[in-house]
Amino acid sequence: MFRRIGRHVEARGVQAAGSQLSRTWTASLVLVAVAAIALGLGISPALASVDDRVAIFATAPAPGHPFGIAVDDDRVYVSTSAGDFFAPHLNSDDERVFTYNKAGKLLEATTIDTIDNSDMGLFGLALDGNSKPTHKLYVADMNGRILRLDLSKHPVAPEVFSQVPLDSGLAGDWMKAMWNDLVFDEAGNLYVPDDKPRIWRVSPDGTATIWFTDPRLTGFFGFAGGPLGGRIDPTGTWLYVSITVSAEFPLEAVIYRVRLVDHPTAADLELVHRFPFDPSVAPPQATGLAFAKSGNLYVNLLGPNEIAVLSPAGDEIRRIASPLFHSPWGLAFVGQSLLVTNGDLEPGVNPDAWKIFKVDVGEPGLPLNRPTTSGG
Image 1 (spheres, rainbow, N blue to C red):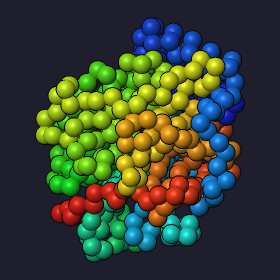
Image 2 (image 1 turned 30 degrees about the vertical axis):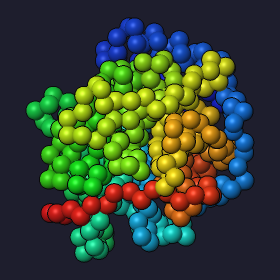
Image 3 (image 1 turned 60 degrees about the vertical axis):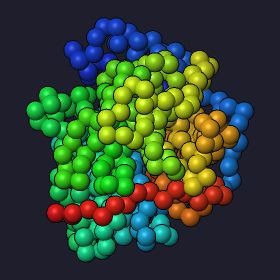
Image 4 (image 1 turned 90 degrees about the vertical axis):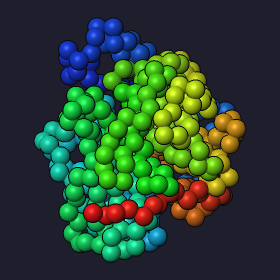
């Protein structure tokens, strides 16, 4: 996947992926990366303006690189991905789920064990609707599993809730199955975008099955670039997903929606919006999503370091920009503001960029589904 890194864009892993990449894909990666690096900084579109309503909500301590975010009644949870194949970052310090209060004060850190020199961390977070004695936080490990944290216990001991089935031939390798975001439906099923390209559905008992796949969801790099962010719309009938770097529309970022039925077909996939690739700037690269009650959809864009706002009809109506943004990744509403994680997909160690921002957007968010779960 192509990501904006400081003053240039870097496609890492041409050598590291070795035999896993064909010569065709390798050549594409090199050509695109060289072209983007030569172009330097992306120039924000005319719709974008620097927003003075962006404030620092909190700072993430080591290992940094805040990715996923979820807002509870009186807490905010943030996951990290210090390990990142594309940045490049290798992490031997495990990952974290940080707990903050609504004022941005760090209260607790839960360690999620990962292998030494890990190159992929955590992303999606989802809360159930159970009362406090059995209240749970679900955490997507992009290496193909979902962890569950019992929020009534201190410290929290993570447990595996679901994982890529061993008999699928896809388990244990994020290049084969990468579980990104998490979103509950009303029945307690979790939908999990996987950029291979497919969307999984995990039943309330943790059983994972491939719910939908379609070649139009394929990422530009084959093993990456496909479905990443996911949210259910205000009608409750569509799952929206972001395509970070599209193969169908080369180097564009795309928003699709899939009808929420038990067995969707190709006819249930609809194109919502295309963020065009301008050769003079970095590719747009859509990541996290969040719906407002109005139906407006907020979309993080890595390339220009901006947040795009789409109308319910799918038209872009404005951009939110700030020099503080460095690889904006996760999104979650709190009141009439958005909390935005700074993924910081830049080379080296940049603790000053490990921030979560609060952006006054002037409208409330759509409440997420928080079903009652068995908790067992």
